[in-house]
Amino acid sequence: MDTKSYTYIVECADGTLYTGWTTDVEKRVTTHNEGKGAKYTRARLPVRLVYYEIHGNKSDAMKREAAIKKLTREDKFKLIEEFGNTRV
Image (tube, rainbow, N blue to C red; front, side):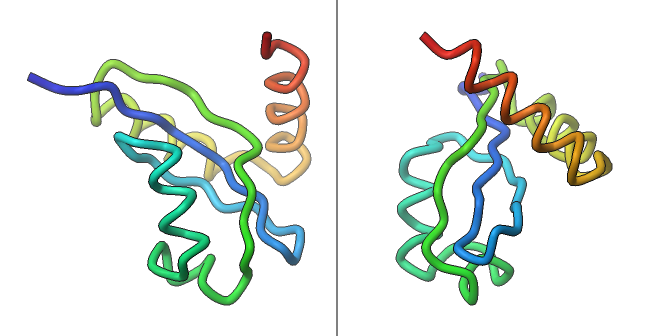
């Protein structure tokens, strides 16, 4: 049985964006900020969570991660902006 999975975007200290997937988004951001996350983020600390989506399984989260990574930087920021406007 799959557990909830997340696709997320963090903004790095240098203003770049990193997209990934996880089963625990808060723990993953903490891991990134401890320098134990993705190699890309280690040299760009700290990171801050700017976007996430909840999925019913790992496969859907990974597919969405791949789709987001194909977006332009501008489209990623539009996604982030829309996310900010829809949060309660």
